[in-house]
Amino acid sequence: MQNSIKAVITGTGAGIPEKILSNYDFEKMVDTSDEWIFSRTGIKERHVVSNGETNSDLCLKASQNALEMAGIGPEELDMIVVGTVTPDHPLPSTATILQSKLGATNAAAFDIVAACAGFLHGLTIARNMIYAGDFKKVLVVGAEVLSSITDYTDRSTCVLFGDGAGAVVVEHRERDDDPSEVVSSYLKADGTKKELLWIPLGGMVNKITAENVEDTDRYIKMAGNEIYKLAVRSMCDAANASLKKAGITAEDITWLIPHQANIRIIQGVAKRLHLPPEKIYLNIEKYGNTSSASVPIALDEANRTGKLKKGDYILMVAFGGGLTWGASLIRW
Image 1 (cartoon, helix red, strand yellow):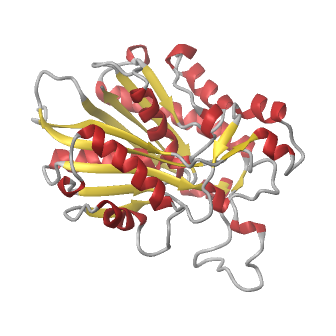
Image 2: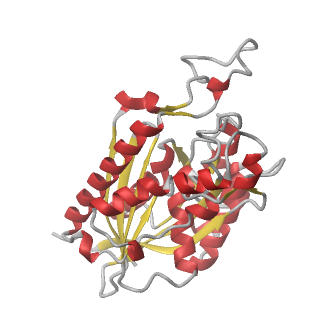
C-alpha cells in the first residue's frame, strides 16, 4: 500500500569558497600541467577555503540559500543532517555547530561519515524519517574542506580535491497529484576495501603523536586504478537498484547527477547506463572533487540555472571512502 506521506525537496543551496586554485597554480607546486590534469580528470579549477574559513561556514551559506528558496525559517527545522569527513572539530558534530549558527533552535542535529556518499545517506535518512511521520522539515547538507586533508606534494591526488558545501530542504507533504518526491534510495558499503581510499594516520588505531605529526599519512591516500573500476561498477549497480525500486528504467531519466570525482569515472557510469552525454550534469571543471558536497552543489546549480523541470526524473549517484556508495532518485 502506498504511503500517504511523501518527502519533497523544496529548496537547494550551495556555499562555495571564493579562493580558486587553478591547474596553472599546480604547475608551480608539483610536476604536472594544465593539459595533463584536464585530460585525465576533467578539472580546470577548484575552490578552497581561506584562512579562518571553516566547514560550518560553508554549511551556513549553503543552508541559508536552501532555506530561502524553501521559504522557511531555521526555527521551523526539525532535523539537521551533515555529511562530512572534515568536521570543524572531532567533537561536537559540525551539524550542532551549524544548528547554533543558523539559530535552528528546534532541530535535532548530527553528522554522517560516509565520505563522497555522505549527502545521499543524509537524504535517505531524511526521506525515511519523514515517511515515519517523526519529522516534517529536514535540512540535509554535504560539506567538505578537503584542502585540510590533502597532500599538496602528491601530484596524483592533490589536483583532484576542492572545498564546498551543498544543501537541500526536505519537507513532509501529503500525497497528491504533484509528482515531486524523493522517490527511492539505495545504499551499500564494503569495509574490507577501506585501504583503497583512506587516511591511515589519526584516530585510535594509529594516533597522531609528536613524532609522526608531520607524516604524510595524515592525508588522503588513494589507489586510483582500483577505485576507478570499483566506482564505475558500484555506482551503476546502485543506480539500477534505485531505478528498479521506482519501477522505471534509465531511459526515463532526465538528468544523471553523478559524484563529480573524475570525468573518466563519470563517462564510464554513463556508458554502462546507456545514457547520452546531454543527460549527464557536469560541473567538475569548476569545482573538482568536493566529496559529499559534490552532488548537492551540482543539484543546486542545475536547479538555479533552470535545467530542472517539473516532473523530471533526476538520478544522483556517488561512491567514496569506506568504501561507501549509493543512489537516490528524485522526481522534480
